[in-house]
Image (cartoon, rainbow, N blue to C red):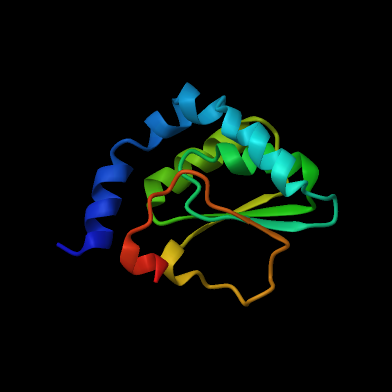
Length: 124
């Protein structure tokens, strides 16, 4: 089994747990992220490997658009459900691998990836 398939299998089974996690939803890191990034109304943001979607939800009120990606379809669906339930309309969703994102350089004014562990190979 490939690493990506293993990740999909393991995280897919727990997708709703990430959405429901108070540690992810109410972490002080969200406030810190907003304070440091200072997102602006005209910006287009990318939340790569969104997990439960909490970062995208925090950024969305401050920017024109947020694009959310996630490798795991179940995780993406759970995050979309949570965000849509809250009436947020400026967020788009797409399945994508954080190591091979399908976007041109400069496509975003802000890129977030809050709680996804990346292997050393990916970061080279």
